[in-house]
Length: 288
Image 1 (cartoon, one colour):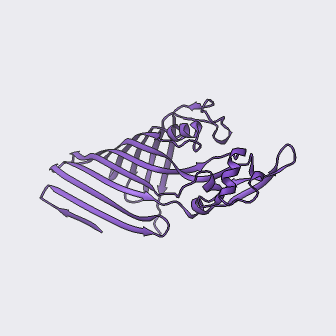
Image 2 (cartoon, rainbow, N blue to C red):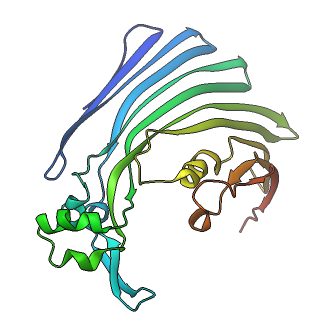
Image 3 (cartoon, rainbow, N blue to C red):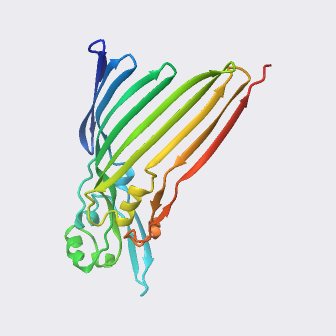
């Protein structure tokens, strides 16, 4: 269901709702509310509030990928990823997965200070709960009775093996500001467009379940994407033979660990400075 209407000459609003039912994960009800208030002909406030979800994929629910390797003594040890309803996973504490759920808010304004300039500024806050990640386990001798009680045959053969499964592992929140300024100018029978876009964002990871993502992964999630990005584009179009643009893209500084090769505590994090990339495009159109 999606409804939108003008409540007054200056105030408009909309609501949307969606209900879905899953055989594995039950039902979900999500909604969206939006509103816009035109304070003047050249200035308006706007905002939205929405919820959403992402169901676990069939691979995250049903993956059974076990490989066998030999240890230093020549013993064959199976290691791998198990479905959450597998006896091995259940014995190690696996519980049914639930969908990732999000709640987001935006608040901003639209302004036209002059006849040829438009400005938009929006603040956003996106909260995502129960995000999915692998739960990492190394089976010990203390786990053998639990595995045997869960119905695993010869559980002692699994000692020292890796037994991983997906779980709802952590929450995250992304906040930021989007800025867009566009101006148009008529020059020499053509149109010049100046377009400035800027995004500033911050990613925070919380409520990390033990044994899931380590400190290095948390660090990368929070720092691998530059917190600042700016695009400035100058384009010119004659409406005929010639068109083109030049664009500067600035990516702010960022940091990263060695990922899979990191010791896991983010002690190997490296920093990278801001960079500017330039794009140039020229289009010539010839009549037949």
